[in-house]
Amino acid sequence: MSINVVDLSIELCARASVTPEDKGCQEVVSHLLKEQGFKCQTLQYNEVTNLWATHGQGAPFLLFLGHTDVVPAGELSFWDSPPFEPQIRNNHLYARGIADMKGCVAASTLSAIDYVKNNPNHPGTIAMLLTSDEEGPAMDGVQRVVNDFIKPQKIAVDYCVVTEPTCAEKLGDTLKIGRRGSLGATLSIRGIQGHVAYPHLAENPVFKSLNFLQALRDEHWDNGNEDFDASTLQISNLNSGVGAENVIPPDISIQFNVRYGTASTVQNIQSRVLDLLKQNGIAEKDFSLSWKNSALPYLSQRESVLVKNCIQAIENVCQKQPKVSTSGGTSDGRFIATLTHPDTQKPVEVIEFGPLNKTIHQNNECLNIDDLASLQKVYTEILGLIYK
Ligand SMILES: [Zn+2]
View 1 (cartoon, rainbow, N blue to C red):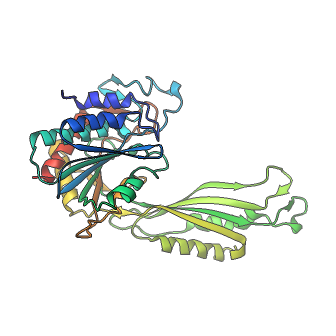
View 2 (view 1 turned 120 degrees about the vertical axis):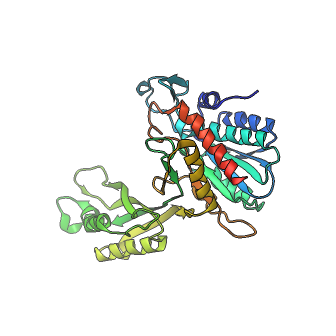
View 3 (view 1 turned 90 degrees about the vertical axis):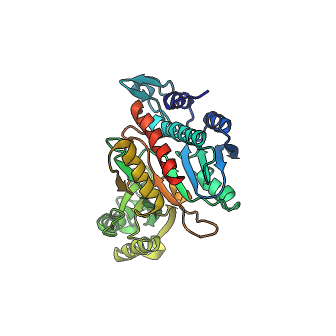
């Protein structure tokens, strides 16, 4: 029995799979894939469920990458219909996770099934990887599958289509060919605690850090390049004080994050932060600094096979040429982008394409149901062009 993309989306969205829960979504998908001859394997790591499915063998090897977890619904009274009771109004399907990204999971699943049905002897491998830990810490999801499953078995992935929502105003307007890196820092600057009435006996760490913080704000990291916007830094947390109004605090803690492209390197950013500390009078003994690079930037070349074919597929279905972009936050594509082909050492080509991202993570998250059908067509078209 065949199911259409709207019905499958509804079935998935009715499951309240708030990260790291999957709530049986992957079982629904694997059931459909198995009926069409896909080999399916569940990879359970702690509380995270991952589905690995393949059809065919050898090259070319294209992987659809997605997730079945969603962010919490938030305040229920802000929703016009319950977030986990999908409802169609004005040609839109409303539900938590429909755009990010259960509608995309439904579309890619059905496109793979359709393609295999019509081309039972296709060359190469069509694969699908779903995780229930994209919105959460992302430790036991795609990162773990890459390190504990794909790499040890030397699985040779050529192309990866991440089915995240990428479009802004109209389906087909944006194709992501890479993402910026994300470098986080936790910094603690020490002063000397004391009574506010006896400042000569103390050293206020807030005042001590002001020049440095200003320098951090004003620093020009790079000019960006053809592929990436200029790198940017934001302070996300700033804490000081013991709670009493008559105490000069002992220290200040500052968290900041740099989103960077290929015009800067991690080493480069780190050494400049150290220079800024020094130039602004913060001695080495007075601070501690730790770094966490949670994503390296990655980029698929505009002339690469996957990018060219995806642009063609989008043009064929949506009648418009997509803008290629590397903007936005990180995605699970960063983990797949660390893979190289075991024989040729060629890096995997990774792109992201999906529907409008206007309402993701918001209340009343929704997707146009015609877009859902077109999205399925784009994914099918990509398969047709890659496996022709
Ligand atoms: Zn997502």
